[in-house]
Image (tube, rainbow, N blue to C red; front, side, top):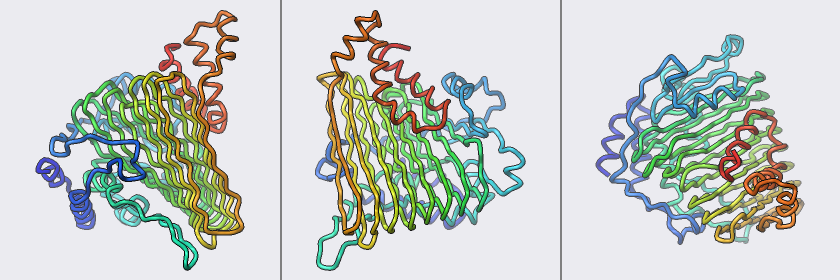
Length: 450
């Protein structure tokens, strides 16, 4: 661990942050890597030698967009965000400024390192409040005399602790009470050095009755032996609305591990979309903690795993207050020798009456050699609720494929049409045209129809 310890010593900042980093690293040092005996990691093992992890080298900021990676240039030309950051490894390499009218109304959008320096009070108030170093104990509050769910295995916090200790940079968004941000804000993260790791953090705070959309994208070329570790903290206060989109399109050879978690207040809404397309191994956790009456969480995801990719999605809809609503729809595609994993839990606390919660996971298999593991779960401790869950896995409809092929449509294009149609009910729920077009382009590349 010497190299990581040395890396920790390079991080400077206020005393409270330095102390938190050290405590997080000490925790990380005591935890095992989650293994197949840990239920939440039963189908996914990460083989990593932490002693050999090399931090991603620093990068200088550029003033000309033409000096950014080609993939980023292409993406920026097709995006409709109002302002954005581009991070290469640990550093911001390009940025645009917020419109002056938003700044005048108190909206803050900058990188997290700058936020620590310039907005220390706000960062200290919220940083680590949603995704702490340790795994959150989401044991359901159950009736006396009954057995609640088991607490998480401590090892589930191994990578969260590493992210909490060694994060280098990320995005910070703060929207004051009652302010609505019309155009999305965005962060484009890239890596450009193989055999390294980067740890990033996103913190979005929407105060009471505020509204904002944030798009978090990751992209790289092929990078063998590279690790991207991250945490996303979403604070949605009473009456606020936050839409959060995560698009992971790392190159081959990248291992992606990220915990995304939202705290949703009274009559507030969190809409999340998780898109997983890249990397060799990807583990993404998306959790909604519904803390206030009338809170609302929509959790959407789509993924396409091909070749030897291994994609693992873990979700939690935790209803801690009455009259809350959550709806989860995850749809995936498996091809070649790929592996897909979904483990989803709806937890309803004692007293969270009138809960309305749904969970649906569906997978389309393009290859007989691809594998899929799906574990939908319910844990209900209230007696006046509507909750359902379900999972389906099946192959491409050969009659549909034959119909398209008989009309002169080549195999690759026919598969693209069927895959896009399968994912359509997720895509139509995303009111971001440029995001949908970008996802459809990745799908076309994966089936060879680009």
